[in-house]
Amino acid sequence: MTTVCEVYRQPAEAQHAAESLIAAGIPANTIRILQGSPTRNAHEQRTGSFDDHDADLGREGSFADTEEVQHDVRYEREGSFADTEEVQHDESTERAGSFADVDYDTVTTFSHHVEHVDVVDHAKLISMLTDAGLDEATARRDVESLHHGNSLLLVETTASDTERIRAVLRQSHMAE
Image (cartoon, rainbow, N blue to C red; front, side, top):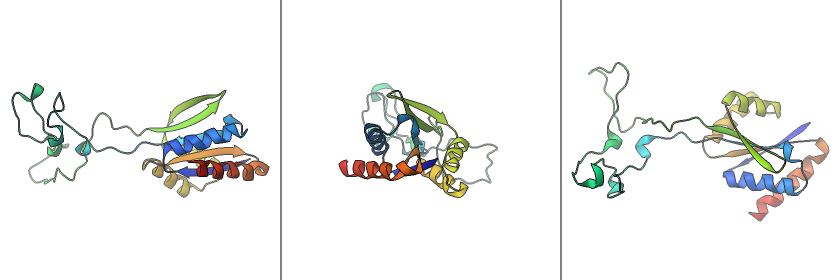
């Protein structure tokens, strides 16, 4: 068994490639799309008031801004474990966490004309990639690239169908 692995910069490109393969008669159950989510920083998140009035200021205020508070919470340090006066922090350079912080990696499979999305951990992704023939260091780099917006398309095939799959993928690139 051979695995064809392609990297895509956008999830929609990988999705389009998978659909092209299925339309070309490649069995859907042999196709997988691996995706990740970027690490977020709450300092970079847009904040504002209830009605988004002056939201670009990123300041926190009372309901409908009736009582103005000139305080930019994006740069307020939230503390750390066992903080002491001797420890000096530059809160503007620290990453701010939030409840939305999730290492969210997925594998999309296709069967019976239905997409199935499963959340997986890094170990599972690395295992999939090493099973596809990549060495572990390359597999780890590829998993890291998922957190920078890349998507990986994996197609399990026979050696004789590899060139046909590559031709369909080239054609789908040109169609975009």
